[in-house]
Image 1 (cartoon, rainbow, N blue to C red):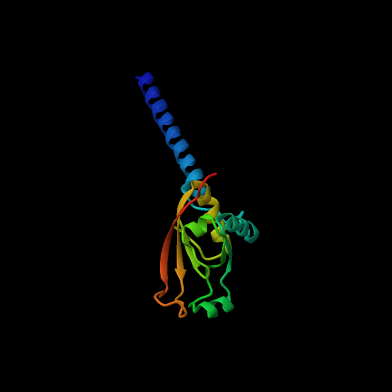
Image 2: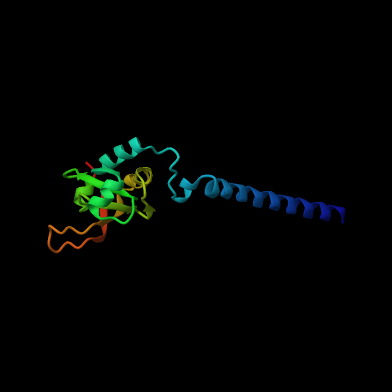
Length: 158
């Protein structure tokens, strides 16, 4: 009888250790390291690094400020605006235009240069991703009314 009780206690202890091991593993992966779940960590991203990644993608960008807000007729000072698109780049091939406001990169919401850099750091290596842009209406170009556009990006390899 004593052997049976000891065996039961050992089984329950091993089971509890097994459960706790997986629980701590999950805690470490999901809670403490968000990049393991597809969330980009912004702590290590800087504006300079974001600009380098944006150039690698094929765009020259800057954060929306009060002046840009007025020029483009935006409602708030938020986002990243495209100042130039490099010819032959993945950005140009996907149809991203000058004056576009980048709103999202593969479901990563973009409000700052750091957001854009972190999103590009995660998505550029995948070679295939989407970019959502808002393109303000241009009164000098008939037929262009502005709106949200989705660009499917494919990074070509040499």
